[in-house]
Length: 44
Image 1 (tube, one colour):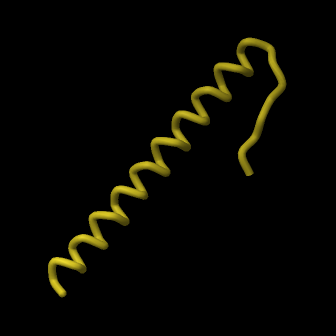
Image 2 (tube, rainbow, N blue to C red):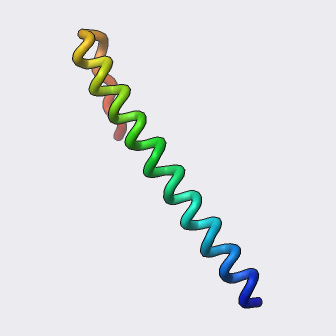
Image 3 (cartoon, rainbow, N blue to C red):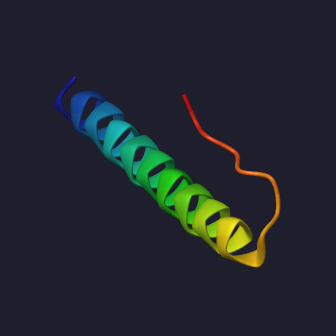
């Protein structure tokens, strides 16, 4: 049970890291596109 709990916790942490990375890269690419003069895309 303890190993399963730690595995679930590790999976949650990994998912959070992936989500943060995707958000950061999306924001960065959006800002870059805005500077280029293309259409602005907002994540809601």
